[in-house]
Length: 296
Image (cartoon, rainbow, N blue to C red; front, side, top):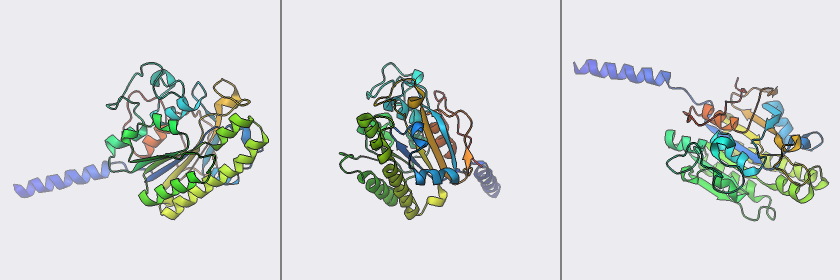
């Protein structure tokens, strides 16, 4: 009788093991370029980003949520919901109105929260230049976070801190925020010489972070995304113009279609749904995003 029970348990475990979905990749690195609008890609110098477009999937038509400001859009990427649900309508740390759903931390259910609840063994962290970025991530769910102070005075610090974290902790999920382009847009304006001069420098920072992933040894089991929160019109953003609401998006790595232009609808909160798909996370009913159709 005892032997029969052991056989049944073994068969049950085998069936469960076979039906459990395997993650599409073991690591995801998201690199967010604040203020990177589609308008700059026609003549902007971004050799590394363009190389990765050919190695993966891309679009110049990703849409912001409205208003086209940083807080609402970085939040939507992480919490998978439109502004009408999240209540995050500006750069303040607290919602403008009561959200439709909050976690036990009295915060939005971001993909970091889902991982903390469903995959607590997985390392997850943020390295950012804009301190308020952390307001939208639910830091209680993070294993690590670091804000880079005085980023404009030490532009290489974001690369050094990101690569250090990636090599030492080999995170399953890391979100890196780079603020330089937004700073140039506000200071000198959309289409300015100063903005275009900064663009290849940012492109090279992205390259060096990716080199750090390769040196960490998990590049072949990784998916990397480059995304943005908004563009600019003049020195500002927050409105409804195409210059403000259209941003590029690039994704490449394990299992991602190569040399593929994304032609379907892509909105900020679809990024959260894509992260959930990669790691087989159950999503809350409040989410509205759909996984981006880029998988082979």
